[in-house]
Image (cartoon, rainbow, N blue to C red):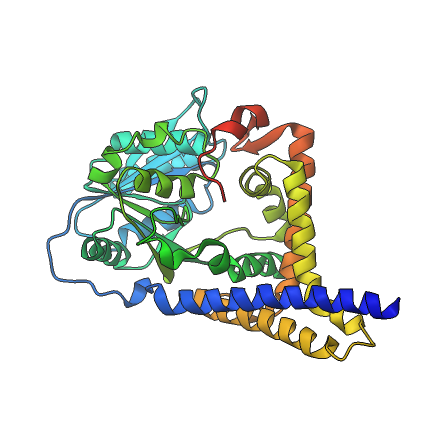
Length: 390
């Protein structure tokens, strides 16, 4: 009986090792293939009109500083549109002050129309005021280094792209939040294969921190009306552009685009309920349970062979799994400018993620959907209208 249980433990460890080795190979390929934004050239040329659209809901602490770095990009023909989305803090007053002091365009959303998610409606309202040849949709707290827009537009033109998004840098949080984010990054390349985005019409990748869209390509699509209830709005915008003949690209940009993801694990757990229940879980408790089991198995798998005392394969398998997971975590952390300590053992982040997924499912079932920007969206209203299937 002992030999059977030892074989099971070693088998589970071998499976974990295979996954981590595949993840490591995918990360190596992404590191080699994906361009790094800060290394892209800024050619001498005439620059098209650029409109930066930032929706903001209760972002009083972060909006002003992020807006100033947008203007400090030193882009020669720039319009900034700030959309206050039903904020209940000082965001409306800050938007008006920035409009008066810096000449940005102020838009205020006082009511949410039926059949729209708040952020998508805010983006639509921003587009209505934008007049640029290029549209840059950005989170309210995303900071840009000088030259960021020029590098992205020049790259898009050189590669004949209509959509460019980035993997941004994320500011440090507490250890558990950093570990959770680092574990997600460690599996990012394996899960999305972002190096395929430019040549494969079915591959999509995007982050809300930075989504650059050619205006003419956007106008060939149904626009945000098509995405009005899309919870994964960033991936959805990439999908929208590609489905209507556009080409997309993805850059690694921790030196050029940075934001505060969440300041603590508690904040992350609360805010990510919509992502894990609606996007990853597709509003299915059963799917969430499967993901929790898979995350726990991948987290603990490298350690299980150590308990198989009678197997000569126990130590080699454990070392292979632990080595591959640590190497992948550290390589990803170096690549994306993340803390090495929280990335060295991805198992910690995976177990934390399993907790977040389980909580997201429980909360989603209990409240019957997701709460986003203060509004409850029912599962039955969202489940069948999502275009993105991750």
